[in-house]
Every structure is written in structure tokens, then in C-alpha cells.
Length: 593
Image (cartoon, rainbow, N blue to C red; front, side, top):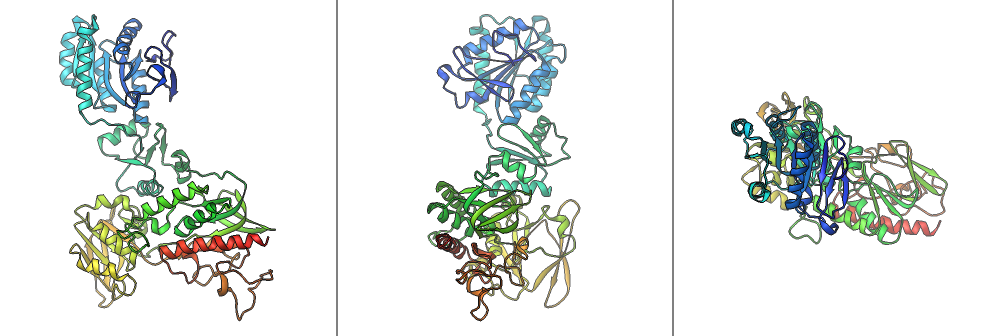
């Protein structure tokens, strides 16, 4: 890149308005309006000119700058390849290109060939060919080849008569069309790619704005080409600053889209493991009461509740609230009070080190704290049936996977489960799908689902319920195509056409990493408080004079809240309440240290 007045390096430079300052962005230099004030739209909207003749290149950039420099970024290139590279960089960043002016005679590529390739990157940009009088015939022919908007004879003096009216008309036509910027993260993937689905769900649950592009559609292919990806390694994630990530892992993705993954301190008053309602409740109350608090989440805050399409029985929300909305508000509330929230950090161990409690991460690093609250929640149990594992993420989903809901439009959806989460998903999917079939292993919904949900499902003509039914198999090539269902009462099996299956079956605590450290029941749920005592005796290994506090585990200073606790209510409100209560008990514990 070069500043005007210097010798260009690499054949590419930005022309700036008089009195402007410079700011380097990914190899290009942005123009700012006089006085340093950025133009909100003009900063990212470019007019690009390419000519291998330095004198002509400087002249056209000078004239464009004089008229348009305050509202548009003028990018000057002295070779077709340099111009194409600039367009690729701008495409990845989400910059807008309104007009491209190219010389007809260039040594590497003719202006026509260049514009044809530029169309693949910015199909909406208006195209102008700069020609000598002798080349006007070729320019006319190019109108059909590259859908040329205008050809301009050199020289164009005076520009007020020959150049500006042409560019004014092209800018007006461009601005009247829909070419708004896309500042969000871009995800390019395949509809039936399991990892593509996981990345979309990860971004959505972490409240990261993104836009989805199918890899087999024109814009997706243009982004893949700009990123240098071949389309076989998907997904490709392009960050707002234009950096492409090929098949990124969750930790890399989190760090590149602005999520916190590294703790700011080495020692805290309170470490909360898990970011569901209990963990978020504890983070809000812990930080608001002055405790140095960090919440550690392995994937995304919200837990199972965060995936819910609607929570209607939570106090204070008479019209209901989505799990994502509730999670976002709680996370922002915790951050406002000063709690740190770390994502993509998996806790794999817990140790007692004197008066400190250490949590160890999967990468071998650790955090020390006075106290720990275990709020790891539960996960949906996997269904052991042939074909399901292979098709997970390709038509088979555990939990709501709300990012896939619109793709179910006018299709038949099957949902396995008989509790509230399955019922809410059925009602939500019925807005989009042609039909929703709720498959329930038991004989009735009333045994495990709230009455208000049962009533709504019965009254919804798009939702049908099949009781005493289980899924015994799934099949399909690159995605789910059929399901095998068995009637548990009568026995016969049948095969049905299906492209979408959502499973909400049971709950397993995420506590295997605590084996041998804290007391758990035979299902893996953490035992706490009075349940630890047998006949009023202190728990085995308990070395304090007092009995464990109500939510305290068999390790002093380590508490449990929410669904991971044995005999918990498994409701959002009770989980939030336990998170708050655990913080009260943390204060009581700290007072006696």
C-alpha cells in the first residue's frame, strides 16, 4: 500500500480526501473525512479503479477523490491481480464496493477479463471500462460479456461533463439496490454438515450475530473463493475483521469472535462451574455482593433452559420468555456487577489445596479460589438406536437446535420426549413445519408434562401425539431420510419418511469428572447438605466441627446448585433460587475461614 505522493508498492493504494488521516485495515488504508470524522457508510463503501499506466491511474483516482473522497473510499490499483486481491480482502471484511473502473488494455488481464472475475466477488458493483477511441468496438461487445454498465473514453476531460455524471448515475443506481453491509460473522457451510450445525448453534447460544451462507449457493461460493477454501473443509467462519477460519474448534472460534476464554486473575473468592440458570443466578448474587467471581462454561451459557423455545411458568414473565432471552439478560446482569464469564473452558478436576479449592481445565491449566459452586446441570441422554449417531447434526438433534427451525418449513418433524422441553419444542416447531409428531414412550403426557402445555398441544391441529412409541432406528445417505418406530404396546414396527428428529429424553448429570472427589448418588447426581448425613452422623471424611450447610457437598467450601444436585426440582426458578442460596452459604463459609 502507498500513501499518495509515495511510490506505490504492490501496485495498490488508497486515494484520500485532502486533510484526511490514515488507518491501516488488513493491508488497505481507510480514508477519513476532513477533520477525522468517519463517514458511517462511506468508510466501508469503495470505488475501485485499476489501470497499469501510472499516470492514468493517478489521474482517475485524483478526479474521483475530488468529487467522492468525503463519502467513499477510493482504492487505486496498478495491476489486475492487485485489484482482485483487494476485492477479496474487502469481501472477507464485509466492505462494500459500489463502482469498479478498469482499463481495457492491461498486460496480465484485459479489462474485460478482470471485470468478469470481479463480478464473481462483487456481482452488485457497477462496472465501467476505460477505453481509447480505437477500442470502443470491443467495449460495446463487452456489454454482453460482463454486463458492462458503461464504457468511458479516455481522456475524460473535463470530468464535470464526462466522468462525474456517469459515476453519479451508477452510484445512484447502486444505492437504490439492496447492498447493505454485513458486519456480522459469516458462516459458510453445508445444510447437512454436522459441524456446520454445531458452529451455528454455538454462535447463536452465545449471542454472537452471524449470517449463514450455504456452500452450494452463489454468495457462499464467492466467500469460499475469497477465503481460499475449496468447499470440502466446512464450515468456514469469516470474522467481522475479514479473517477466515477453516473448520475452527470451539475455543478458537470463541476467542476470535470476542468471547472471553482466559481468566483475568489467578485467585478468586468464588468459581462457578456451569452457566445454566443456577450458575448465572450464583454469578449475579456473588458479584453483586462483592465476591471476586468467575463463571466457567464449557460451551454456552444457559444450559438446557437456554435452548428452550419458550419458558412460560417463570415468575415475572406472564407472556413467557425464550431461553435465549433469559440467558442473555442474566449474563449481561452478571457482567454488569463484575462477574467474569469464560466460555469453551471444560473443567476436568477438583482438588483441595489447603484452604483453597482448585479447578483444573482440560488443557492442564487451573484456577484457585476460596469456594466453588457446582452448577454443571444435566445433558439430554443419548438414544441408543441404529443410525442415530451417524446422522446426529444431519437431521437428528439433541435439544431444540433452534437455528434449524426455519429449515423445517412445510416438512414433517418428529420429536421424542414427554417433558416440558419436548412440549415447548413441539409448539414452536408447529409454527414452521407442516406437521409435528410427538413420540412418547409412556402412556400419557400428563405424567411428566405441565398441564398448561398438555392443553395447548391437544388444541394444536398441527401437533399429533403418539404414546407408547419409541424410535428403534434411523437411516439416510447424507442426512436423515427415514425413521423406524415401534409401538411398545402392540409390538409391530413401521418405517416413516422423516428429515427432522429432535430428542429430549431424560437427563444425565455432567459430573463424571467429580468421581472420587465429592459424594454422588448411583445416577451421578451430587449429594449435599442433610442428605450426606447417615443417622445424624458427620459424612465420612468430613473434618469440620459443624455439619455441612444445606447445599454444601462432602468437600467443605464446595457447593452444588440446580439440576446437578440430587433430588433437585429440575425447574428454572428453583435452579436460580439455589444459585442465590449457595452464595449466601458461601458467605457463611468465608466468615469462618
